[in-house]
Image 1 (cartoon, rainbow, N blue to C red):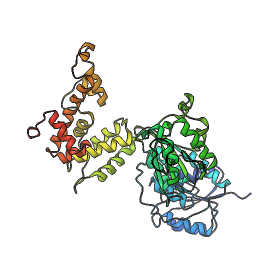
Image 2 (spheres, rainbow, N blue to C red):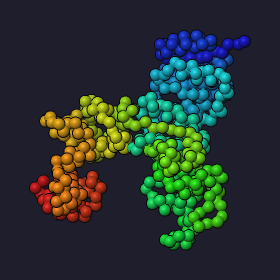
Image 3 (tube, helix red, strand yellow):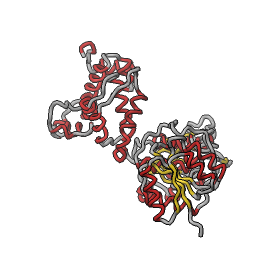
Length: 475
């Protein structure tokens, strides 16, 4: 019986030797080359049953060579390795017809498993696309191992209409993943329609999803087109699906089963052709146990699960994320530099709000301290609200809620009851004054900048300053 011959193409001799040893022990014959020219020569001589190749080689990029190989031998499996561990690398490898993609450094057992599978399977059909393999054109940042696994799953889904369920804590980038699946998929020329279940009154969710007829309920003055019709031919992103009411879940299940729906107050079924991507920060299995989510719907939407890790579990991606957010939010021609100690501290922080919290934090730093070097002291001052020159038991406080708890603990219940303004109003006043004082100082009393940072309009800001009797000229 003819032994399977595998070509290894990599300019790193150490990698070639390791792969050769492992593959020969597994019963494969091995041919090796250190460049693209050697790989092309071996392919032309019909030496290969399978190729394992690096992307970047001294004479040519493997992504430029793969189409030629596929034209000569369409069924030849190609496994791509790369240290350029980005989503676009995984997507490009998949689009060019590679059997699989492995980020460096890789696990030998995993590689052998892929090789064994590739040898026994037909290669996927090739569909060349014009993508620049060296450039990310979609802002998915991160080369950590958890993100590499997500990129590999996403790359395999680009030409699929399978329903996807994205789970993860708030702020981990679930909508960004959904957009990427749409933008690089077959439906990219159609509409991507997001809808957040948690942001819509429960009684209006069915109307938002399926539309309604004129007069179908109080307030239905005109006919309304629902998200399913707007997204027809494209992608419907159901964010926070764990907050969807049971009645709406029942109607959604029917759409997924039958491919049609009826508007609220309507009688005629309407055909729909949408790809469903759902997301939640809740455990839907727990929701099922308490009767808040339909089990049959769960299995309908959980065809392909993507579990996003919290930022604390991929902290090696924080430097790249920080660099991206600084360049994205820079307010002048001079870009902020960040000290290594400050970067290390950011990596050690737990980031309960995940990427969203990190992005907002960097945005605040860049806005308040344009052109300044971002130091460890500055990070601590802004992130923890501490005077880093003094040590106290407050150094253990990690969040604003910790400070509120500490503040409230000093009062007796009688003192709280006798507060004339009421506890809630008193806390708001105590909270507002230092915030306004801080922002006005940082912006040199520029009310336009201050209102932007605070998210208030200028009239509201002026009203608050007056009510607190704050003289900005003395700040």
